[in-house]
Length: 186
Image (cartoon, rainbow, N blue to C red; front, side, top):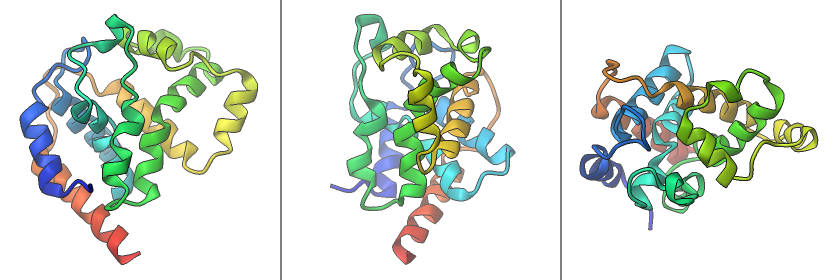
């Protein structure tokens, strides 16, 4: 079953006020901040849509607050893909799929990166397979959309600021709609 724009709106309206894994923001605030950071850096619509939607899997596979504290990896990077694949292209979906591995890669290639991770990101890193080896990082960097996934990951890490002002849900649903229209045309 494909998720429509209306379905995505409903998910955020129904579950967007859930806390974002021990952070000072909600799921919706995190999504809006991720999208805003992407826009601020001049990302194209598909990558802004990916930034906004990258954690939609948390809203589809509800595991309660901070599942990492209970040793649960909800595999959110994969969970939404079957529902989004009929309506969005790989330009949107691959950065979403790869954003967890992008964290694993950044820990391997950037000595300062691990120290900037939140407590929940450190817990989830362990559940998600840990830091890549040099070889794994090199292989990751060769994948299509790896660079977009690294950008998305950095926005994801920064999108946890309490009270940050962003455009609203309608704004980012408009971006997703444009990305959906490009997919239909292609």
